[in-house]
Length: 568
Image (tube, rainbow, N blue to C red; front, side):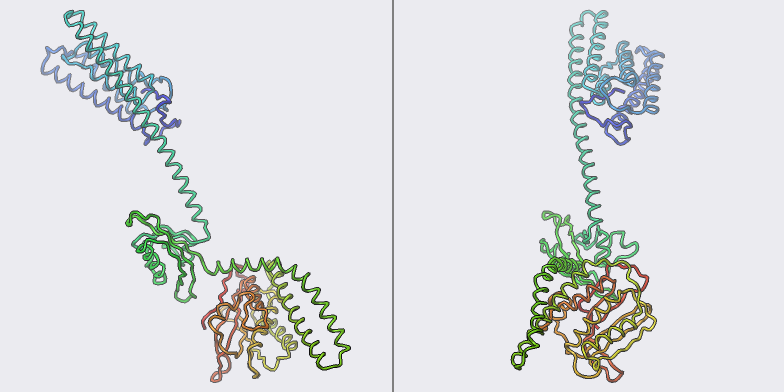
C-alpha cells in the first residue's frame, strides 16, 4: 500500500481507527483488487476452456491465481499504515504487484485483450492514498510500460508503429491527468475531513462544558418541546420539581404531575406567542407547602416552529429573598460601626446630660419635657442596639450549638421578661415539652422569645390570658408558640412581617421580627406567622400566633427555609 503524503493531511495517528476515511479507502481499494483478480481468473479460465487458440496458457492462469492469492493475503492480513511522505514496504505488495501482473498480461496479449485500462487501479491507489510524488511516479511508470509495450509490438508489426506510440502516449498523458486530479481531490477531501474532525471535537468539548455548567448551576434549567416533553433537566430543576427515583434521570412529561401544570401552561404560552415570558409559579405538592418559583422562558429558534425548544430557567423565590436579605444584612453590617460611633456616643452624652438636668428641675412642664427627651433617647438607643445585634448575628461564627432544655429556657426567659415589662398579669405559660432538647443557643433563644413577646404585648388586650406562650414536642419535633389576642393582621402587613425596618407601628424600629428570623435560620429552625385559636375547649379565641419549629437534635444543619406567612 502506498504511503500518504502530508499534502493530503489524513489523520496521522499511530493507530488508524477503523472508521477513519483513510482506513475505509484502503479497504475499498484492497477489496477492488480482490474483485479484479477474481474477474481476471474467471475470464481467462473461460477463454482457456472455450477457445484454446487465444493464447491463454496454464501459466497465465497460474499468474492470475497467484495474483488473487496475493490480493487476498494483503486484504486479510495487513492493515493500513499511518500516512507518511515516503514509500513504505506495502507499496511492493499493492501497486508493485498490480503493475507486474497487468504488464505481464498486456505484453503477452493474453486472450487477445487490451489490459491497459487496468492500470487505472494502481494509478488511483497511488493518487488517493499516497502523495503527489507517488501518484505522478505511478503514472510515469504506467506510461513507460505502455510505451515499452508499443515498442515491442512495433518490432512485430512495423506498419503500426506510429499509431501504437500515439495511443500509448495519449493513454499515458491521460493517466498523468488522472493521477494529478485524483490526488488534488483526495487532498481537498482529506482537509475537509480534518476540519470536520476538529469541528466535531470542538463541538463535543463545548457540549461537555455546557453540560458541566448546566449541571452545576444553582438555578434550574428545563428544556421542553412543544408537546410538553422535558428533554433535559439539571439537578437544581429536579430538586425544584420534587423529582425522585428513575423519573429524575429520564425524559418525562411536564404534565405528569398536577403540580407542574402551571409550568406546562407557561411553556405552551411561550410556544404560542413565540416570545420570552417570566412569571412566578406556585408548585403545590400534596402534604407540603407550596414552592414558589420564578420562571423565565426562552425559545431556541424563531424560524421553524416544529424544531423549537423552550428553555425554562427556574429560581427558588425563597433563595432569591434570602440573597436579598443577605445583601441588606451586609449593608447594615457595614453601616453599624458608623452608627455606633456617630450616634451611640453622642446619644449617651445627651441621656446623661438630661439625667443631670432632671435632678434640678422643679417645674412640671420642664420635667415633662425632660421625660420626653429621656424616652426618645432610650428609643434611639434601642434602635442602635438592634442594628448592632444584626451585625453581631451576621459576623458571629456559629458552629454546632449546644442543646438546651426547651421548657426550662422558655420559663426563665418569660419570667425575666414579665419582670422587666411588668406584664406578668397578662402572660400565661403552657409548657408541654418537659423532655425536649433543642439545638439552639440560650442567649439567642432568649432574644427570639423577648422580641416575640414585645411584639405580642404591643397588640394584646388587657385580659389575664391575652398573651400565651406554649411549647410542644410531637414525633421528635419540638416547637414554640407565642399567641396574643390582637386583631387580625392585614394581608399587606403579613407579607412584610419579617422584613427589616418594616413595622405598622410608628414607634417601632421594625427589626425585632427580622432578628428573630435570622437567629432561627442560623440554627436550622423555621419561624412564621399564622392566625390561630388558643384557650380551653369551648372558650378558644382567635388571635395572632408566631411559631418556631426547631431542628431535631442530631439533624444536620442545612439551609432551613422560613415562611413569611403560613396558613393555619
